[in-house]
Amino acid sequence: MNKEEILTHLPYSKPFLFVDELLSIDENGSVGTYTYDKDLDFYKGHFKDHPVTPGVILTETMAQIGLVCLGIYLTATAASGLPGHVMLTSTAIDFMKPVFPGEKVTVTTEKVYFRFKKLHCNVQMTNEAGEVVCKGTISGMVTNKMNG
Amino acid sequence: MIAIPFQNENMDRSLILSKLKVIVANYSHDKDALEYLTESTDFIKDLKINSANLVDVVLDVEEEFDIEIDNLSMERMLNVSAALEIITDKLKEK
Image (cartoon, rainbow over all chains, first blue to last red; front, side):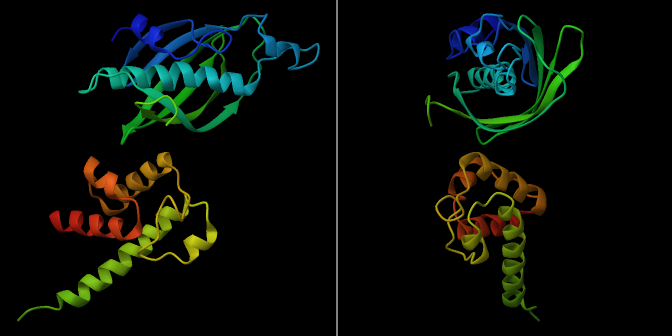
């Protein structure tokens, strides 16, 4: 499965799709980018008159590019060949820098392990200056069903 | 002269149980069930461990006992007695 096919298998759409482009993906990890549209609805309230991308959205972006794209790739290339769904099960993220409306970020993921349907990854997000914005670990269960 | 396998096996089982208890304590969400852990304790129903952390239990078991758990064993490993049986069997295979 190539990068473009993986994107078509993502179960998200606007305003909750946080992947623009996959730069690379293989069995050990993925790299992808996303630019936060300045008109995204949550900027109106986070924070009042001072829009900053919420940490949960940064986490979601890392999960979509890292965990979900990689999970789809790994299941699609496995023996059964069916691209699975990924259910988020845990996150541990440290945040270093704010991400403002309009910024483009790059997410890099390294697979730590994928065993017994659990995918556990190290993830890191950098801004256009190459500074680390946030990093940590994310894991999820790769299933055949959307919600379980 | 035969050694005393019966006694050794018993000691092994209680040692395995105590090691297993340390592992599951990291993922358990029910203190009482953990404190009164018995062979019939169910990882999901009693200890409230979710499916993702159940995988962590199995990975920790592999590391602690230096054994490899296959997919079939993983699917059976839902309570303390099944875990003890699987660990004991895998240790014998070594």
